Image (tube, rainbow, N blue to C red; front, side, top):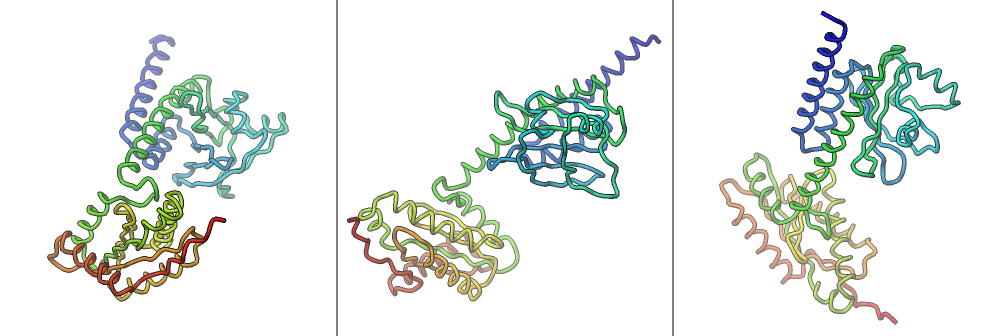
Length: 338
């Protein structure tokens, strides 16, 4: 068999491997799962010691994810005027089979991401930009502990992979955006009524106490009428942010519509009452255009109860609280704009 035919067979086999990698990546619609698969597939495709994906962050710098020694780690790197990643984006570097010599020649310093003294240093390095249109999605790098580990053919395959990975990443981000829009309230960012019903149904199926808290903002129309809808929206966002603060570790928060909100808390009514006390005190300290009344009704889940009956019990207690002026925060008279 001639050398030419051997090389052709090898290239065909490698293209098949590349197609398989792209197919594996395309099956994922969530960015986290996609990136984990990407690291594993790329490391196998290039028989590399390290794979690295750096994505630009809104505040500048890079969110860096690496796979090294079968461990995926993440780290933030600050922006640099002339760093290795910046040079990749600018098209100034792609492949260096003696990275220490290149760094010395260019008088360039680099940060060893996730430094571990038990692992060798990178000697050979490839990096390509990830783009969609004119937007830079990141930098994909493949690294080896050995000198002269990569060939121009390796770089060509990495560039082909980067084109497809950029498309797959964009599709995953679009899917996640559509999912967020379908499941969250656009004004407050809380889960919406659709998710509320689904999560209540799930809660009734699971063992353990869960307490539902429903609430509304009393005299909310007055805020809109006297201070304007922009002020009303700010009040609603303030309530939502306080609910998120309360449920950051445990529980789920929802906007049901208008000035109506709900919480699912994984505890009994007594503990839920204590948490709602924290909610009211935190809300009282917020700087809002108007300090809202919150009418709250609590109802712990019961075996065999339907979602409708559970919500009805909580609603009836909320209306009783409103009538008796319980669980309220005072709403002061609007200040004269003059």
